[in-house]
Image (cartoon, rainbow, N blue to C red):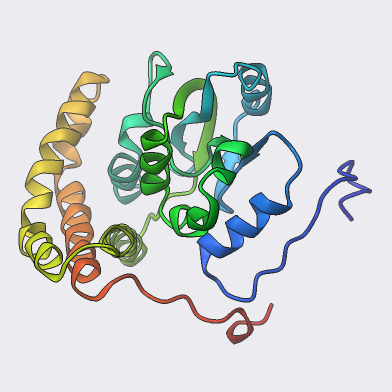
Length: 252
């Protein structure tokens, strides 16, 4: 099928679980190119996305090259709020350069990922923590606005709350793995303050990028999403991340 579509070198890696870190780690180890791109199923690159990336990957300085982000379905308030909560720093970016990039939908130098050794799969399980681990090893990332990825955002109440809760729990559950019980509990106790800190940052970002009216109109949805995320972080710090089911539990 892939060969008929013009992709003769596609390899399929089968994972025995839905653990994202294990699946992506196996894909990295199987890949043969200098860069690998972690693309989400709900992501759609705009025209010119790959051309922009390919023009930049020859710069030896960068270990990670990340895109700007837009919502593929910006029609509802929930989708717009999810966009700014989950991807705010990369929305409507005016200029690129060295700095933070999205954990997914970014291109990673394969040698930098393999330098993580046995911790690769664990680091891949949460994109922000993967980037932090690479930074501690001296690797740099580059934001490339010309490469824009549109992502389908949750656009109903239930999907919106569930997605951001799950994201918060995943982040906290991954982050807490080597922490003492005291540190885990202290972060759990402080998690209700997260919405207050993040709402100020998001509103400032919206205003900076010319969306002052949207900042006011979107406050209820933004606060709802941030509270769901804080609840997810509380659960993650206390109980850890949700365990993925075995792949055989959901045959396709």
